[in-house]
Amino acid sequence: MKKEKCSKAVIKYLSNLGIFLSIISLSLAILYFIFPVNSLLYDILGYTLIVTWFLNAALVYFTDIYLNKNFHIGKRINRISYYYLALFIASILLMVFGVIFSAFIISGILLVLGNIMIISGFLITILYGFHFCIVIFTNLNNRGVWNFE
Image (spheres, rainbow, N blue to C red):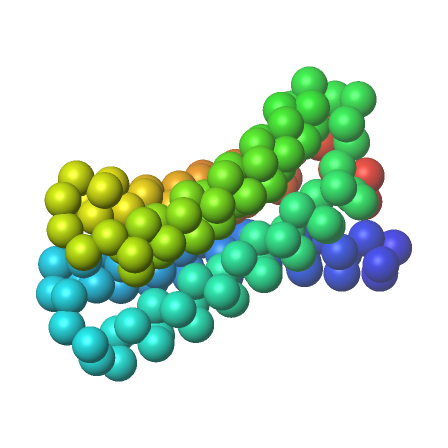
């Protein structure tokens, strides 16, 4: 009985922290793109983004363990977690190729394309991670969705 309460509390805590860190990361990313000055905001954004990525990965792991995939809401949450993993990989690739374009191209349309790729990579991970955490948090108290009940 204690293990079930502990696992539910861990998932609730991770989803709450994920929502909070996603909001912080999104606001820092907006400040980063509005004021592109080399400052402490770069470091804080990077640290919060990496912590958010690891937190969402832990949330995917706990969701995979405790989710009842036979229930229709459980199937939907399971698909959302796999979509998050696929979009995470795609956004990392976008950011890497955007940095490559921006580093080797001095001017022109490819430089703009590289910057757009970097920005979209940031926004995809932040926004879909935010969506994933909200879906987990809102469906945490639904009966039949989780195996720790």
